[in-house]
Image 1 (spheres, rainbow, N blue to C red):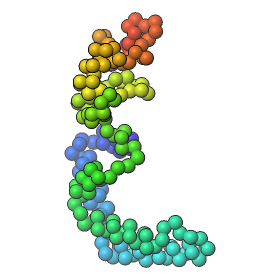
Image 2: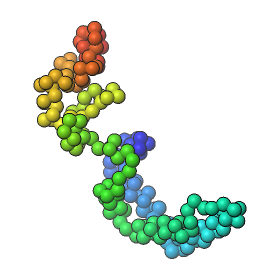
Image 3: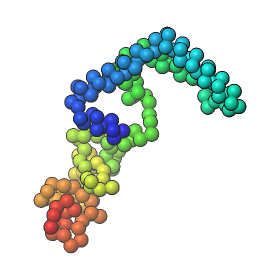
Length: 169
């Protein structure tokens, strides 16, 4: 994911979206009837070779054919519709890392809505406005008057003046 984020950061949003669309559209071009048929022949040849060596293939030819048929069917769909479907209906390991939620109430936050606390530390988290106001009032989140950073009491510099972990002595 980091490499995709780096590419996203390298290009303007419009260029990134169009590049992604172009990548998928060009890839979809390879799923015409002839290339699918040729791939299925290659699958059968590979399976025969594996079986002739006395091995059992990890995926059967029929299973691989099904994957090709599915990909061929998807290749006829609109790229944006495919991306929307993936975004809304498919879940992958690590997806929670892409979603920013308030640590206290679990509300899903947009970047501009959440307040980052302990930024740069392993225990960093985000708070929504309401929970952030409560946390600063009760002292579980501290605002540095000098630098404007937010941190928790476990990051207070013991003998520091100021006690903020972000400010230099």
